Amino acid sequence: MNEISARVAAFRARYGAESTALPEGPWNAVIASLLQHRSVRAFQPKAVPPGTLEMLVAAAQSAASSSNMQAWSVVAVTDPATKAEMARIAGNQAHIVQCPLFFVWVADVARLGRVGEAVGQDFEALPYLETFLFAAFDAILAAQNATVAAESMGLSTVYIGALRNDVEGVAKALGLPPGTMGVVGLCVGYADESETKWQVKPRLPQSAVLHRERYDTAAEPAANAAYDRALQSFSAASERNSYTWTERVISRVGKLRALAGRDRIRAAMERLGLPLR
Image 1: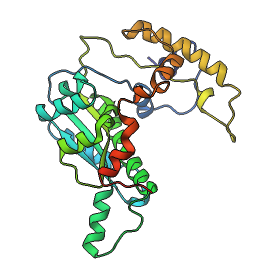
Image 2: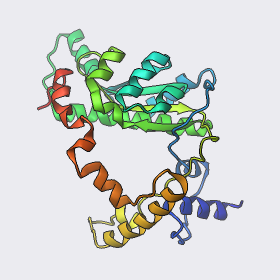
Image 3: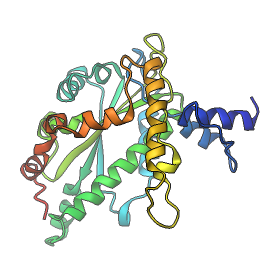
Image 4: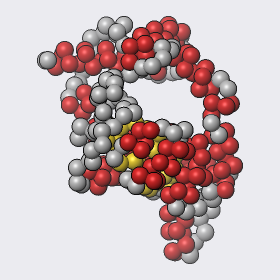
């Protein structure tokens, strides 16, 4: 497949069959890998190669960091019992147990606090929302760098946001100190292609998310309708249930029960030593 054909195929996979525009501009192996990202929820019982963990952390540490605070940590979990506990917290997601390597990415304000203790200074800005936000952003940027690196190695991944169902349970299981919180999990391993073919899931058209100079929703109704069709076609062919994006949004934010306990996360954060002001 030549470069133009590969680019067109990648864009159509990412945006759905209705995408007919010929994408122009730069194209390389990194962009191709990014556009081919897919979430995988079944893994082979096969360990990752030696040195993979350390290389993924090196890639994670190469992400941008707010003011170079590097206010994040990561817990690498391979113990079956601990993975089983993470799976229980996340609503019994079996792929957490299956994957050979599970990461919990941690917003780590505690490390900054320990710097203050070491120099005998009270850090007045620690208990503020901004400090937690840059710690959480740092953790997510690091996790995404690790994800890109893993996929470049032929590994597959899936993020686990449902760890936030019980952030205190995660902290207890992993021995996290006060001032820290696991913000997201990440399964890493080799995809089990025998159960199902994990496909690239289409995303919203660029007309829904790309605004030039000023925010403008004029194109949003048509973009949403097109995406409803694309996602319904994809889900009917590749997943157990057929659904539109609109239906997905309704199911996720229409009722408080969909938060699965995450509606109480602010109080839990205070008990974890993150009293945000």
